[in-house]
Amino acid sequence: MFKCPHCNQRTFSFRTKLSLKPNKLFVPRKTAICKSCKKTVSVPYWSIIIEMCCFVAFVIAASSYMDYRNKIDVALAITFGFTIYMVSYLLIVPLIKWKE
Image 1 (cartoon, one colour):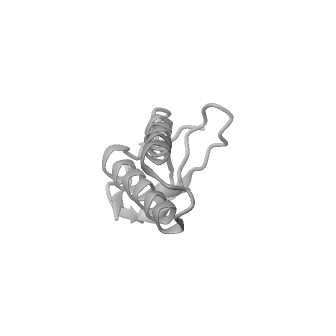
Image 2 (cartoon, rainbow, N blue to C red):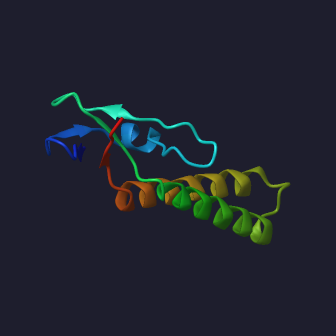
Image 3 (cartoon, rainbow, N blue to C red):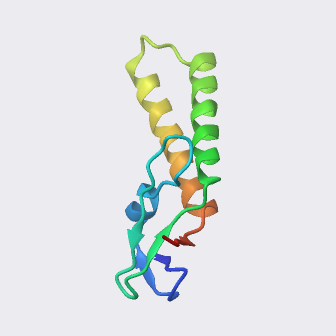
């Protein structure tokens, strides 16, 4: 659980935080409402950089080391890339107050 930046209560789950998106580069903003204080939170605009870096790293690794005919290699690469994305997003990206 993650703390709300408004009331400091742990009200946001892992899934909720992963679903939040900033309002930059043609990506529609996704916000969440705190169950405790009923205020809106989001993530900072620079969080999309983490997504892009993980995607680029996955593409480089996939193109260099994978044999696309082997379905297990493809599945492992996708699982590894998504795991790296989730861990980095959950540990680095903070929840921020959102002003309308």
